[in-house]
Length: 420
Image (cartoon, rainbow, N blue to C red; front, side, top):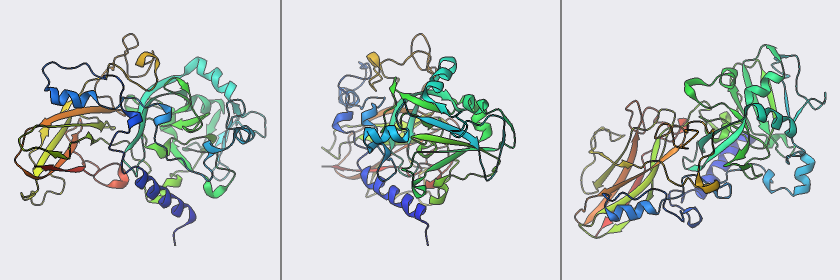
């Protein structure tokens, strides 16, 4: 029999799946009200028109898709209740203590009992010395569709960890947020301590996040403070953070592990469509736009393939590695980033961006997304299937090198097109 938490996670996944079936189509509120990219005079006008209608690159806090947990969801609580339970900036506090079941040795635990828990004022004092901001796409492992993309700002978790003066037996850090004082609703994630203390492969640090796109983190986005793990899927970036435990535990104890998930997965590269005409006239060119999530292994290409349904698919090739894929155009950085940033510009001192010009230091940027576009040649009448995929920096074509759903987005999207 599945446990209550397994039932909870399965229900959450199914509800989220139904809610996001339309996530490949930009909503009216998400469409750009201004051109995001400078028009290329050499580009076909039909394709340029599709590019001009692309979604804003960064997502406003209000437009982030929501997969919050809890009954009631913590962000829906009345303001008075939020104050009572510590979900406002003036009442928030964070305990950073030893795991009682697998204790670490700490000289100075940050606890409410001792009156040493970290409050928001204390967090802001740390922020004056060492705050960081970076761009990241937030994605749910079991949905695939990104929830939104933003500039996340906060204090490195390790700065707070060192305040506890750890001495020994620290192998893992686990944490959770407010869960309505109901143990069955608690949602927990964890990290090996080396990831907290060290930023491998030039990744940004794990942060206690308090701002998104330059504004205080809203309650719906997990405010006043949430965890943000740059390379992780959303379940690692726990909202409404209240507790961090330093532990001698050797294994992951994430709640999501009970839902048959790979809790150590890093963001995977994949491509999806944003606009595809489902019916076109025979011989007319077909403009298609989309986005690619740039995972931990980067994106070197986005490729597309239009297949006539009457033609046989390749034999013994479940991932279509031998299909006649064609390179799409990976679009450059936007001139206006969106997300309600002042003048649509990237804030200074954002990791991965030139501090003077605000331009990305490389493109595509890992852990972000990139837009792509292609103009398919006119085809004879018939039924067709359009597919798209990424190729990462190591030459692995989606869904490789991790083709399994529980280890990140894997499937190649298919869209039916009728040519009349």
